[in-house]
Image 1 (spheres, rainbow, N blue to C red):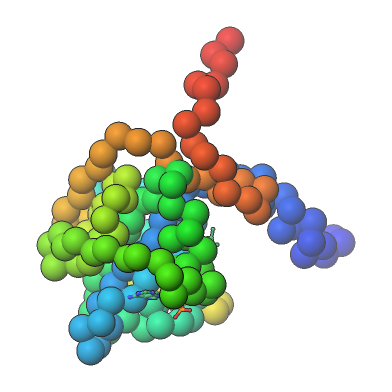
Image 2 (image 1 turned 180 degrees about the vertical axis):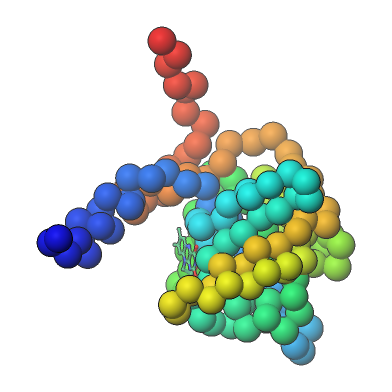
Length: 162
Ligand SMILES: Cc1cc2nc3c(=O)[nH]c(=O)nc-3n(C[C@H](O)[C@H](O)[C@H](O)COP(=O)(O)OP(=O)(O)OC[C@H]3O[C@@H](n4cnc5c(N)ncnc54)[C@H](O)[C@@H]3O)c2cc1C
């Protein structure tokens, strides 16, 4: 079988539209850290279970130490936040945190899940961090969407049915 061309794989994968989250955690010194993630998945309802895939880095180390993370679902006004937590730090960004179940949350997020890791699975250089949700809440607003390697506002028209 012919090997899959990495550029073709990347382009095809980019056609899968996702929301955008920032995963927040507390490191061993109690400092807040965070990373932008679009591999967030809801896994099951009983118990409420989620997962995401984490590459090596500061936030993954913090989660390994504390066993906990928060999932901040971003609204469509939060492109700057997404960029900031994806390794393009913006020193001028005014970050505000609130707290839920002992975890930091970004003020203005669309939904928040407080999570306890129940099963970390190493997959190559990524780890799948399966977690049980201990608290969650949401508000109604338009989501930030990532599609075709670009950000989009998520308040589009409903899909046509039939
Ligand atoms: C749309 C999108 C989706 C992505 N999805 C994934 C994914 O599913 N899995 C994955 O592994 N990677 C994903 N990434 C890449 C990931 O966001 C970056 O690799 C990120 O830099 C990793 O964060 P880190 O904590 O490991 O590293 P760091 O580089 O240490 O932290 C990330 C950034 O957050 C800032 N920051 C951290 N904590 C704070 C704080 N308390 N206050 C202010 N600023 C802070 C840092 O300045 C830095 O710019 C995605 C990127 C994008 C753009």
